Amino acid sequence: MFATCGRLTARVANRLHACHPDSGKGVTRLLRMSEKMVGTHDEGGLQGTAASRLLSTTNIWSDAPAPPPAPKPVPVPPPVPRPDPVARAPVAVEIVPTPTPAAQSRSDHWPPHKLSLALQGGGTFAAFTWGVLERLLEEPSIAIDTISGASAGAINALLLASGLAEGGREAARGRLNRFWVRLMHEASFRSLMLVGGFSPAGSSVAFGPTLRSGQFDPFDLDPLRQALSRDINFSVLRDARCPKLLIAATRIRDGQQQIFRNESVTADVALASTCPPLVHCAVEIDGEAYWDGGFGGNPPIVRLVEETKATDVLLVQVTPARDSYVPITLAAIDRRLDQIAANAALNAEIAALEWARATAAPSLRLFRIAAEDSVDGLAQRSSTDLGRGFIRTLHRSGREATERWLMKQGADNSTAPAASGQRTAAVESALA
Image (cartoon, rainbow, N blue to C red; front, side, top):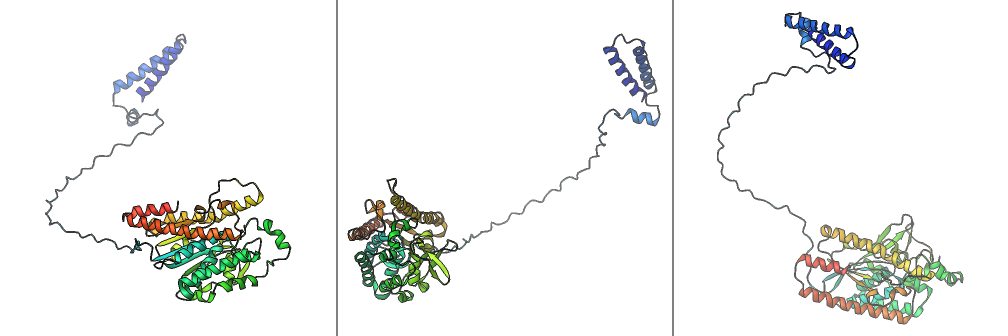
């Protein structure tokens, strides 16, 4: 202890002397005292008291506690030598593949034995679909499996299905022909109601004077029911020979799409699917109010793919998607907005199918025939045009477009390799 204190005293004295060399005898005395303390410790060695010996081995000037003594090493027993491994005969392992659900086999036959149809609505533009269906009915090898439709597409679907169930292909052609010819000759406001030939956004602007003149009662559904019942036999839709039907309407309460199938399709369902909100009152079915089915899906195509047994689906698109002109007038703006809205739901459903097809429907072949590819300037025309020349042009264009589609797909099918990847690319190009 004395040695430690002496060293500390000497260190302090030296610092004082270095800083203050003229500080007098006080520093000299401090240095001499430190020498005596160190000398006393050196002479006594480790013969002092137990306390001095303990203090001499302890750094009392450190704030940190002294480290604990290191633990003694624990002896580790030597490793026990392992016995030499006994050679074993190789065991044959049989890998059993996990069974997977059998996917629908893709048919390379053309024309397909079974075909499902998705029919878009679009007012009088749906006369194009009339031509498409007429040409398909001339192919005896094509059987129609499932038909989905909204608005005017639903009317075409019902005409086709009821005719097939009642009298086969010729009866279906006759019903389609009678309906559209009568529509042309009447050229009435009621005719437009039957095919949903109104813009949802601006019908009250375009047809306000007609409504105010009292020529049409928006709350009287009976004339429309009678007109539909004259051309569509609703009772035969429940027959086993009838194709499966998916008719879309839009629930006003929540804006969701409602699908009506064969057993529930009535004249009111057809009216609900073609009901324009600003022209006619909502159609009530079982306490639920409905508007035009084109708002939720025009046409419903995802549901069709889910429920059809066919691997080939043909979409007939009648509402133009492209327009190179920027609309300026109120009528032109309204028309273009209607076209964009009608195709927005369709594009979303096609995108969903493309995303899910790899796992959910690998065998699906989805084709499209678009009216705008065959009728020049269709985007500038009105879907309320009931002119006979225009209707006939649409009908003829639909027939010709279907003829080209049948020939092209038949040629591609006969020359294309059987690789599934190349078939998938063909489907994607059909949807481009």
